[in-house]
Image 1 (cartoon, rainbow, N blue to C red):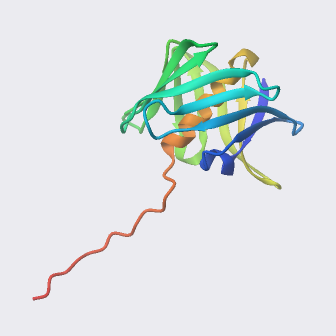
Image 2 (cartoon, rainbow, N blue to C red):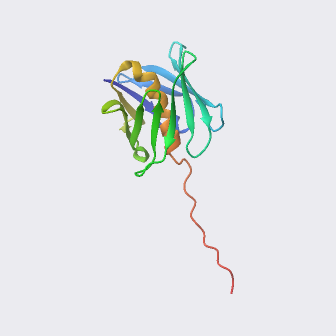
Image 3 (spheres, helix red, strand yellow):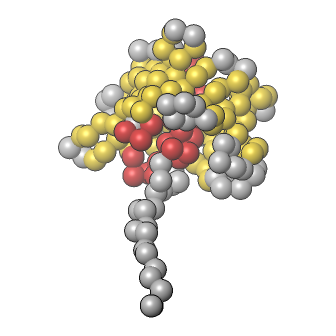
Length: 169
């Protein structure tokens, strides 16, 4: 089991995201943006090696992203409506992402096997997302999934209070 951490504020701002290991060492860098078709993310090792690219292909309430490793499409992730709330499907890998997205606690599973767990961690030096990934070969794709799911499940702007308008009598 590998434990990694991403600072929540950086994920929320669509800024550069540095992923750290348990010792606090910088391991990965994620950069990118979303909001338009063709936008996406790139995951790099700290030596500058490109590991994963993610491109947005559908822009809607239920968007879709394609995941590429070494230029080859290995999977796509899409948000799905569900009875108990949304969930995510990672096609080609047959992974399902489900849980309490709004409280930042969810799992990625392949059948009954857990691939990754993510939850919010409150540490003395800030709020982080703590990721526990079962197999090291899944780390790059799991990191991209974590950023996408965070982005698609959070409402970043405060809800506006509904105003009642009354017509004069």
